[in-house]
Image (cartoon, rainbow, N blue to C red; front, side, top):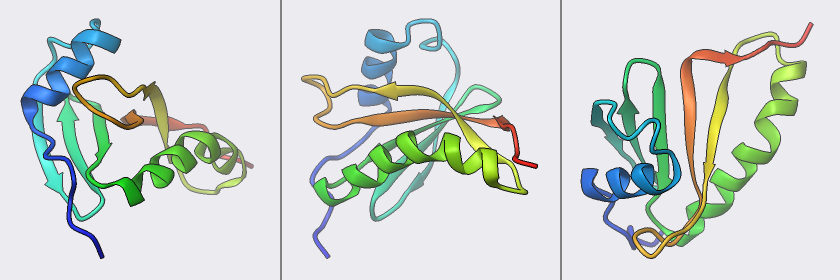
Length: 109
């Protein structure tokens, strides 16, 4: 497995939020995980920001953005809802996500 290629820190996340979601940029931001593939930050009370840390993790974020809504429709359990599909910028080279932690996508029946 290859090591992380990008160090994701609070400053990077704040730049992305100010650029793409200024309505959320003033919410408190706290790193909660720095995993092998992704860094995860708590944003306010009910959001999470997930950013890939290495090239191999980018398809995982893209798959989540594409397939989670359909999975939620068929799932008997709650699935985190997508709030924003982030775009690459000069500050961060890959797609990233903001998801709701308290208001998941509706479950399927």
